Length: 317
Image (cartoon, rainbow, N blue to C red):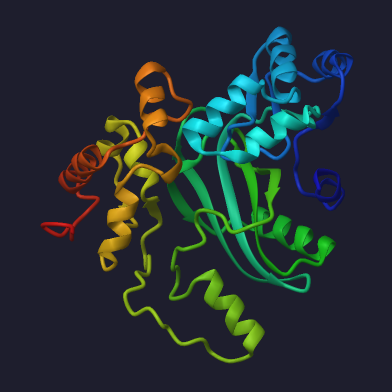
């Protein structure tokens, strides 16, 4: 995908597949650091390492390319209830690793609705705040970047795609240019947002059916003129200072109190007793510790005081 987009004029960082330790040494010798190493079939930044030195790159390659130790896989199975990592560890097959040159800047992404190789609608976002050094976005700014739209059209036409996909970018701090990083062949975390009176899902349905799709959810909140959005419930795991200082609108579906109540709880994989014990024993969780309902309500109060929430109900079920 990187090669295909680069051939069509889309800026992309240098990249290479790493199969051996010699590949890592050769990559570090010819490419200025820092370097980004990614394990295939990972998500949410969990399989991404930014290495600042050749020894760090080598250590990252060895860790990412090897299947998880059975003890670690068993811990993930018991704590996170993740059977897929356990199955991968059981296979004992090495994992594909890709290296990319590091682009200094902030992440950005675009979600695309398409049909038979034609882009129907897009929604782009610059990431304002995110979890950890490689984690998911917590605050985004809606944008209409021609660079991202062009890359989306090239990717869609080249692969003759139908449905939804997302492209990740880094917006270069010096030039403002969007550098394509990777593709997500699925709905992404901005797919639910209603912008300019419609959603990507509604746009695709309208195109496929050939008729206007009625708004079946009258409580769908349109962003309207808002461009800065704090994603819920991701914002609840952000640092307290960033929550207080943010001026974003937070997309809480208040008109669905049962859904809000569910999202205020810990993520489903982290609700078990083993996961709770792990979070007590481990000083540093990769993207922060899970937030209990009482902590979540405290964060909501902070957001209310900061003016990010203006219509918080007095009570939830």
